Length: 354
Ligand code: COI
Image 1: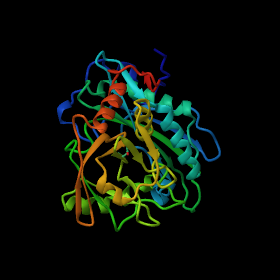
Image 2: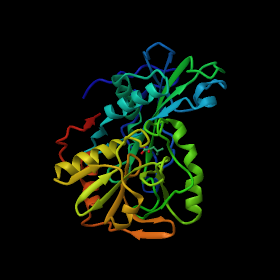
Image 3: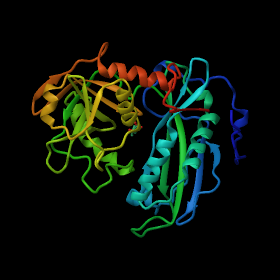
C-alpha cells in the first residue's frame, strides 16, 4: 500500500482512527449525510495552482458572503464511491475520471481546479481517514463528494478571486428508497439543460432547478422525471440524477453526451461492459415515442448504480418494462457492482485499491 500524505491539522490527526467500524445502523442507510470524521480542504487564488491541502475535522466550512458560489453559482460537484470488499480491502472506482470531469467543468465555469493527482490524493485521504465509515460489504458504500467553489471577497460578476476545493464523505445506501421500482414520468414543462449551457458538466446549478419538476412528479406518485431536449422536446435526455438506457432486441441505446447530458462515469462503464459482453451499443438520439416499444429501460449513475425502470408515463400513456432476473440491466448491474466490490476480477483496470 502506498504511503498517505496525511498532514497534521489544527484539530485532528487521522492516524488515530480506529480500525473498527463506526457506530452506524448499516441496515438503515439511505442517501443522506451521516457525518464522518474528516474532510479535506485546499485553497488557491485565481490564476494560481492549488498546492497543499489539509485534512481537518468534519464540520462547517468558511464562506465569504460575497463568494462566487453563494452569489452566482460558481461551483462544481463530483460524486464517486468507495467499496469495501469481502476481505476488507477498500476500492475506489475510476477516480481519475471524476478528476478529469471536474477539470472540464472548471474550464466551462472559469475556475481553478486541482490536478488529477491532487484530486485523487484528496479522495484517497478522505477515504483512508474515514475508513471506519465505509459500510461492510453488502450494506452500502461510502459516497465521496468533492466540491469546487468560487470563494472570495468578490461582489463583481466575474470569476472568483479565490477557490476552495473541499472533499467529504458519507456512508450511503440506496438512492431511491424502493430499488427496482422506478416509475418515471416524462417532463413536458420543465427543461434541465439547453445547448451551450452547463448540462454537460457537473455544475451545482444543474441541481436545484430540478426540485420543482421532481416534487410535482412525486406528488403524482412517480419516482422521478425524465427530461426531454430543450430545443424540440422530442428526444429523451436523462433522469434527474442519472443517465438512461433503452433495450430493444438486444440492442442497447443511450442518448449521446452532446453538451446537454451529463457524461456519467457509470454510463461510460456500462457501455464498455455491454460491448465486452457482445451487445451492440448505440449512442444516438432517442425519440420519446421509442420508449413505448422498448423492452427494458434502466438508469445509471454513481448514486443510483444501475436501476431498472418499472414504468414510464408520457402524456397519460403508461408503458411497463421487464426488470429483474434475466434482463440485460440486471446482468450489467451484477457485473458492474461485482467489479466495484472486488467480487469479479477487474480486467478493465478500473478499481484503485486504497
Ligand atoms: C451521482 O453522484 O450519481 C449524482 O448524480 C449526484 C447526485 C446525487 C446529485
